[in-house]
Image (cartoon, rainbow, N blue to C red):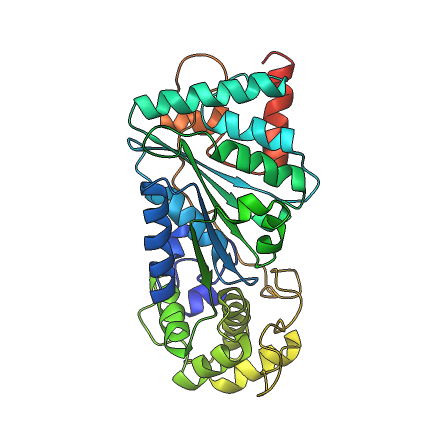
Length: 348
């Protein structure tokens, strides 16, 4: 028996993976999504969602992508995983995701292809939207100038493309590398940490989705989880996941505050005292590692997420399931996209 069986859970409730199944529509996440959807619906050009580490930006980005009707939007999500990419790389990836099967190696020709494709989408009454996660990785002036150039592509009544940046607050400094681009931010929203009520609702929401029908944590334990995590969703996940394992070891039903104290001590997390810097991270590492994950191996099924179809780089248009196998998908990481480009350059 593992802790999932002991607590009668169908699956891991506090994985740090950004699974939209467990998306919690807190008051501020709801406000953020409404504003971002307004920005893309009215094709404002550039919108910005910022937040500190672990506040739920990536989950919100995937939720937003999933919320864009395919009959109205040509949309894509690009995840930037390091700062070494170039402007030419990014232009090619955007072109691929918007349906240009063979992006030109010549920059002028590529920009022409993008303009023609965006004009085609406009004639089809579709809106081109590119969501960029981890946008703080875009650190060069050249990169910012390319975004400004793409935002200059307009129809008589609106922009031809809208970008939504999801990133750490430092993305605002990056935008200042190109002053005119910084002035084109049409909408900005910042995600904050949860208050206690949101933390409590978040914990119960995830447990409920995982199959819980009982109060696994006492109210005192939830108060401690909120205090140690400072309301940061990722830290709530890490503390709660470890607490489930520790509670299982001592057969605790419900899990009490002392277990949370023990978990926090093991992780090196302290409750922030009055006067401490609010921006100080509660404890490294933020990412789930072998040390922060539950210490007993637990079978985990890979969650099924909605796959958004993308035009196949070769051959006839594929079905939704086939599109997932053929790639590129609508959501790409750097290594995956580079692999696709290599195949295209080699002719298939």
